[in-house]
Image (cartoon, rainbow, N blue to C red; front, side, top):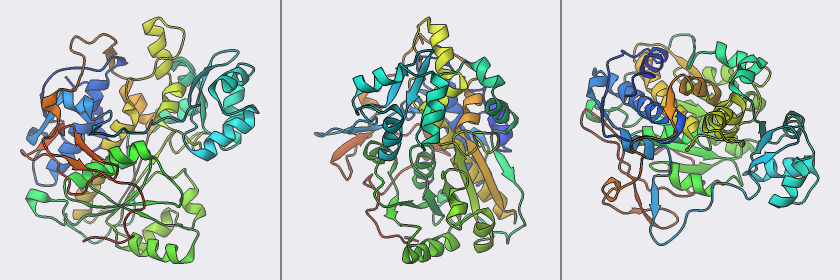
Amino acid sequence: MAQPLWPQITAALALPQTPFAEAGEGDLPSVFAVGDFACATIGAAGAALAALTGRDAGAVAVDRRRAALWFDMTLRPLGWELPSIWDPIAGVYATRDGFIRLHTNAPHHRAAALAVLGCAGDRDAVAEAVRGWSAEALETAIVAARGCAAALRSAEDWQAHPQGRAVAAEPLVRWHEAPDCAPAPPPGPPERVLTGLRVLDLTRVLAGPVASRFLAGYGADVLRIDPPHWTEPAAEAEVNLGKHCAGLDLRDAQDRARFEHLLDSADVLLHGYRPGALEGLGYGAGARRTRNPGLIDVSLSAYGRSGPWATRRGFDSLVQMSCGIAAEGARIAGQDSPLPLPVQALDHGTGYLLAATVLRGLARRAQGRTTSAELSLARSARCLMSAPGTLTPEVPVTARDTDLAPGIEATGWGPARRILPPLSVAGRAPSWTIASGPVRRHPARWQT
């Protein structure tokens, strides 16, 4: 069922098109093939892992219903509640000529939006202020104030937009050639091939942490690094599974020295900083490669690495507004307001594609080839939009008691159960030895 998306995903990753085994049934309601996208991207990560041990995607099994569940919140708290993933004023608002989504989860993004609007920080006041603006003018003003917003655009408008054209010209995975390095086989034994793989994770909500969660599930030593004061409680509980989480201030001399030691000794660097941000800290692509010639360097952006929006801040919900997903959903549903995807599918799908890219980089490094690669939420959206879905699935996806893992996860916030993983590779599902917990709770050092 996921096969419509499989050829373009496997081509982007240089994987054979051998189909994976898909079981179960169910779909999420959407005009786009979210269920197919979930299965195909999770299957791609599995196929890339299988390839490291000489197997093809025939060794990969994906449970379709659980794949869709893993594109949402997998954690079920016992006796406590997860905080909301949204700030009270985040969301969609009507402008005088359309709609705009404000993303205000981070305090500085919230402050930027309120400064532009010149109103109190409550939803009614924001709605009143937004109604006086045109959507594109308000988007431009908030972005200029270093905030995050996206006006609603149709798919046709996005295709004609300079950034939409730039994204269309980019591959799903952009690979960069670099000087060859010394051949380095995967560090672990065939049955746990990622054991000892050092992954330095500089990503935050949500795609990058999904990628490193997957890698941790198959044995990688993942070290997440966050700056001072950053928190994302709802997302941390979901994606910090299996990771050590430390904090460093890359403007502090001692912390920079610690970071450089970690960078020099890492196998993989995952980063989602806005283009130019690492360069501004002195850790641009050339500097990273000089320090660590064999580094597998994989990055994520919201709107791609070319075009006028290449440096724009963005999140899944904003990209859905920009690229036509929310407008197309509204058009087909026959409603006046934007209809986004039922889950943050761009984040989750891109996360599994990031993980697959890392694993393909590991295979290339075994041959003495260095790897740098870039992915973007906007380009993943183009992939998703190439296959139609349904707003009224015959079998809607719902979690069942049998979907929950039998054990209790002692998270940093309280006990919980988690949905069973949707994937197995050669009969082996991912497993994690570290429960989810807050950021910056561990020292900044490798465990292997």
